Length: 113
Length: 112
Image (cartoon, rainbow over all chains, first blue to last red; front, side, top):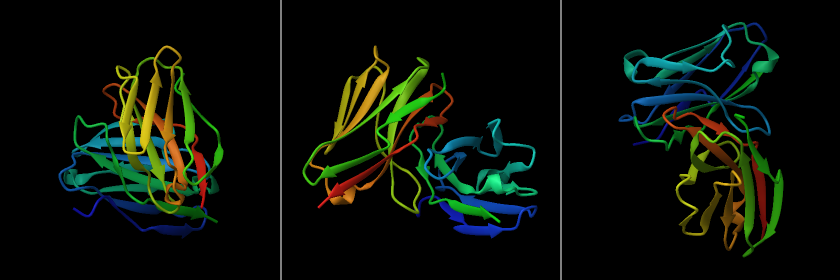
């Protein structure tokens, strides 16, 4: 068990470009969460999956954001037409269904220039 | 009503001292209150958590005190060590949702 793995660790992109992040959860965890954390703030919930089903999306997740979890394993978060306001740390976490305790990954830091 | 208010924003404690971080909430539907520790460049790691039917929970040097009537809870770090220097977040979850509302964080520095 290597924990929750996120790639890439850092991404610098130009405004207007599309970016995609990947999260590999702990293998036996069927729930997967995405959060966004800006500097000096706590993480904010974006969306979560149970197996391959996306069960909830935050209002923070605009139409430019899309998340998938094909086959209930890894997940991807794509941001289209990036804006400077998208610059943040994107955190992925996983848990067992029915468990409140998450395991977070180390995050992907996105910088939009 | 969905907010969790955390204080102080930063805290400096001498080695061996007690670090105390406070959080307050409004939504009585919250039913799980974890504390997370985050080091620079890392994701948050679960430290300790409590449910509202318990007034105190202790794990090693870390204690959560919970006051349901005041809608407040706090983290106490006893015998604080330089290795405890990190940012601490309180959070709350509404039953069945498993998603967290996080506080704004407290940056703790423990002086050697």
